[in-house]
Structures are given as C-alpha cells and as structure tokens.
Length: 310
Image (spheres, rainbow, N blue to C red):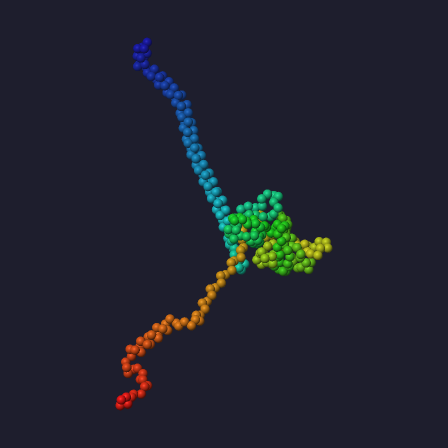
C-alpha cells in the first residue's frame, strides 16, 4: 500500500498538495493565536515597564515638589522674620534710651490666666529689670512684670492692672488709660466734660509715671460719649498692636550716663628749681673759666705804689 500510494503520488502529486495545504492551515491556526498572545504579552510588559518608570518619575517629582514647598515655606518665614526685624530696627528710641530686640517665647498660659502677659527670652543677664518698657513697631506693648536670669514676664497695657497716664496728640487731653482684659477696649478715665478729644486721636505717654519715655504712641480713641450724671466723659480706646500676632518686641533701656572727662593736670606750684636751671648755671660757670684773661672783668682793687710796701 505504501509503495502504491508513493508511486501514485509521484505520478499525480495529490498527496504532496494535500500535505502542504493541510500543514499550512495547521500552521496558520497554531501561529495566529500564539502571535496574538505574544503581542498582548509584549504590549503588557512594555506598558508595565513604562508605568513603572512613570511611577518612579512621579515619586521623584513628588519629592521635588515637597522639597520646593518646604523651601518656599522657609523662604516666606524668613521674609516675614526679616520684615518684622526691620520694623523693630526702625523703632527710634527716645534720647538717652537704647533699644534691644527680644523674642516672644510664650503667651498667656491657659484661658483662665489672671493677667494679660507673655514671656520673652531676655532677663537680668541682659539688664532687663522690673518696669522695663516693652514696645512694638505699632506702639507701646507693656512693661516687665517679673524677670529671671534669662526670661521675663511682660504685663500688657490691655490688662486691668495696667494704668498709664496719657495725653492725646491733637487736643492735648490728659487722662489715665486703663486696660479691661482680652478683647475688651481700654478706657481713658478722668477726662473732663469740656475736653475736645475726638475719635481717631492717638494717645501717647506723658512720662509722668517714671516708667515710659514721653511721646510713645499707645492707643487710638474709638468712642467718646457721656452717660448719666457722670462728671467725666466715657472715652474708649483700642491698643495699636495685636496681642495675638506678637512674635518679637523691643526693650527700651536707659542709656548709661556719659563718663566724666579726665581732670586737667594742675600746674606745679612747688618751689623746686626746674631741672634745666642747674645745667644752665653750670654751663655759665664753665664758660667763665674758659674765657681769655682780657675778656674777664678788671679788678677794682688799686695797685700799690713803688716802695710803699717796704
């Protein structure tokens, strides 16, 4: 059978044709799904590798963005600090006073604190003592209440225990400015009914209490009215600074008195002969011994006559 089929195939070629067509079809049905699978796998791998690279790039970009944000925040903080310190340096201390900057390290501790205070990082080691004036670029903040070696507590002008004599810049109306606590306007007491004080006037220190220099701005008049049978006007005022935004303040200190000039040396009134006098006298004597005989003065004694001595 094999030889017959082989001989028939040689003569007709049907077996070869059938085998070739059948093999091609089988190859096609085998290779097409494999090619499809290979294409999908290669595409998935390429996308996976691409996504991995994109993910790594995104993580790098996120890190760079976070670092840039940190640098931006730091730069803004430095710019804000520089502006605040510049404002402090622009505070011109009154004559015979000096200025020293200080940082606020703590505000009033707890909502039930009794005093409107904050803590600064300067103490007695920096010559900060009780009643040292504390100011901000806007105006007077308060005075030192307690001081330790390296810290001090500042009593703000808004505290009810703060009473400062002030005068208005425009009408020159005097009174006592008293604090009323956090968030409350201050009161200007003992203002006569005939006073010409108006809202918007700036209240400055008078220096009569012996703590603050004269002429420092302290508050702005917000309201003026008269109630009942009171003998004085009701004058409300608002502090020039914001207690919640205090970060740096300036301390005013009295400059040390100038050193007295050295006393001028008094002239020597002793009877001692000057040092060069004896030298000049000896020089004159020496010069007289060395002069020739004819230059010396003649003696006034008369000569004896001949034979007179015999």
